Image (cartoon, rainbow, N blue to C red; front, side, top):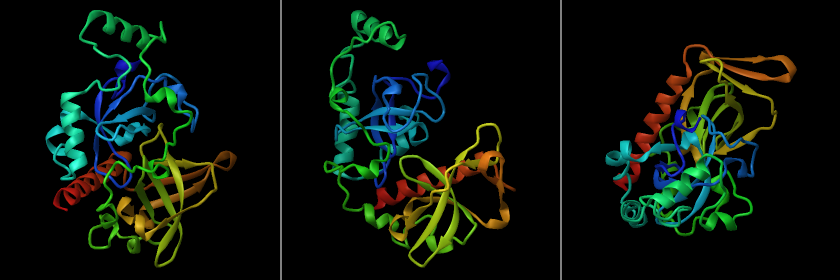
Length: 279
């Protein structure tokens, strides 16, 4: 099952955290069912939250699969995405100490490799103690964490009108838009002022190519000082909203599919990388 997924335990990745460029990181060996902010199985899937260790800062967070990118395939582009001193130090550590504070110290030796394989196969729970063992509960939303070791001096500039990918002023009621926090969120604008929009967010439907579903009527406010996280915007004439069975709300793209939204997400990522690299 693990071989069918984009990522595996022990993989080096670039991980996206709110207010920061993609950061060099590693997927650690922690049972996926240990995730505290939702129910997920130990079998990974396309919407899995992975236990991620960040090089340089030594932070540990649960990060959604869609906020991760393979390390080697993106090393040239993302490895130069930021001039922050802490970012450069993190890249050096990823290359020179890839197994720092990992659950299996030297997997180049046969005993350690067999020990790790036994854990991966579920035949054993034996592994080294790490910082994960001290974590009782971990937030899925990096905005809840005080990342004091990361430099945040330029993060707020990303949301200034002249730097954003999509301005909050461009959104209108019933438009569809996406915002990137620890994972992509797909929303419908339900009200708007000059300084914020109120939205209802939907989950991407897995059995269709253009639908998003919602069972929770709770709304969320996106203020102008977070507009730099908006990665797509479709006018309401290209979106249909329906009521399904059991109170399920459906947002259906009329002229776009999931792949189109993903392309907008990639364009936004490039925009953010260029911004951090030029600051």
